[in-house]
Image (spheres, rainbow, N blue to C red):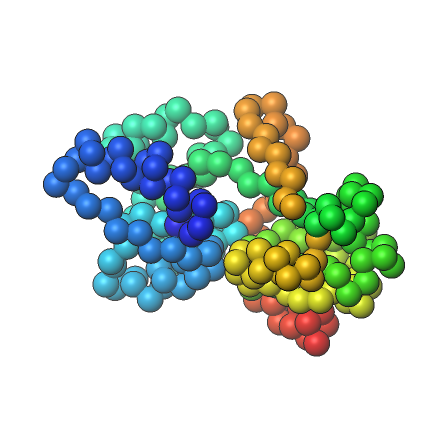
Length: 233
């Protein structure tokens, strides 16, 4: 699972109650981000040591394409039947259990007028003060898709996204690969307290921006190569 406060919350709400109810079982936690977890699954394909993996759908779809799962058994995982229909995946190779907000975060001591949309990142006053996720993270793929949508493109027409991110390059101070890097940059004053809102419920599902992650899995290697050539260089 993810580390930091995410790990602490899951320990308190899930793991400790589970261990209390099952005193013969001790849960060992390994932490990692999504694509690190996919790499772990590949490495353990023939010698599995991790039983349950938590990650976002960028990695989940990739792992499914590589047949890295043992399908879930609805008889053993009874709560599958309680999920929103949109969260079930055909064949139950994995299941979705939450949705994730990708948000703009800024330092309110430095930024007097909060950014109102992603487009504000391109404003000249943010030059040299923007950190964005690298394409080797799930968030990098999210950002590229958002940029494409903003610029008239789509998941199957990604060129407008690359064009828009090229225009952002003068403002970018770094490309982060770990959540801890973002915290450090805020502490150092290099980028924009996090104002996080946690939407929930069926009505929120109707407003989500979704994409075809199975398609992304197929084209992602080309995106990574192009990102490294056009954006980070």
